[in-house]
Image 1 (cartoon, rainbow, N blue to C red):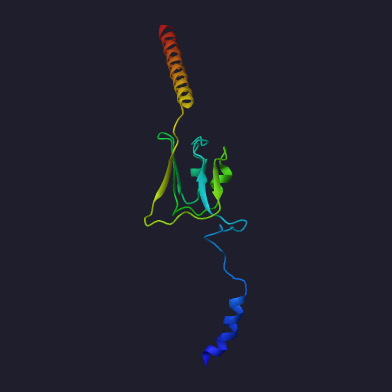
Image 2: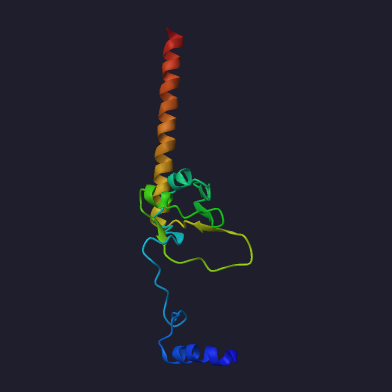
Length: 149
């Protein structure tokens, strides 16, 4: 008897348009304002550390010495503070979600220096060493002048 009570609903659904989306065939359209996940254009990043300082959960780590930027996806709450304070605007919130994994992990991006950047860094280091040497020579000369007085 229960089949006769369900039959009208079944026939109605059989000839009506599907209510579900065609997800695998068509990509999902995320609603406006949905959060998503943080991505970085590492070549534009100057590793200033402002994103790391503004992150309320401490999910972002910037290492200037190793030229790396690391985000722990499980600690990130997708608040967007890091994208707002980035001076180079190299951080973006992309709609959608990360692919699921079986382990808790962090994502590390490494900035690989180009030849031009390496040359500029070497020139800056040479200028820095020359300025330090000049300051030390000046200080030694002042100390020698005081000593001779």
